[in-house]
Length: 284
Image (tube, rainbow, N blue to C red; front, side):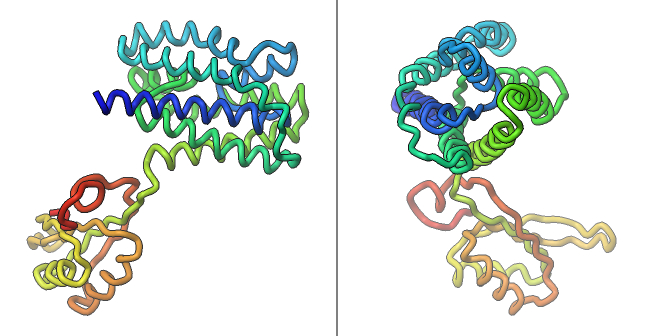
């Protein structure tokens, strides 16, 4: 029950944050967002239609598709997020009068950051605010299309419309805002607690593992492999560490086996004992 309430609390917070970014930073400078929200903002600038009300209306056919193709649970979550986001956009419309940033470039960057944080919270807890989120889910489930390409094509059309009505400058600023928002969304979804994974191939795995345990305080997993050319059995050390521990492990490995083969990779998010759970810091 706590997880359920926490999930919907975070989705709610994400919707409120994302809606605030629209009225506080985008609308005052005639900037747009992507997808359905971007279309709604265009019609708001042209005809004065409420942005939130438009978002609900435009999402009705998309939610119907989600219910039919993606299931009841996804549709219910989408309806909740869509209605909340739409209501929040219209409820915070008064913020557009504040215009805290006079510089359009700063406004587009700040708006993109805040929008990305809000969207990231929604996606991190498997929520949806409708629009292109539904299209993405359908594309992932039924088609082999790359959704990034589909999303880019849709937003490109929106930007062309924006350039036609509001000028190329505002269209470019909108693209900057969308780029910043997309990157922040990924960061929030993946997590900021980034680690490094190491694969170490050596004939002295016992000494290297012992050094990592004692000197770095991290556990390691021994994987078994075979050389493609020599057909010799090899033991591979797999270990997850923080960024600050990389240099120390490199020195330890070089001291034990200067000929060791080591690969360092990014880990977007690490969960489990030693990283997100209390207890020993050894991971295996």
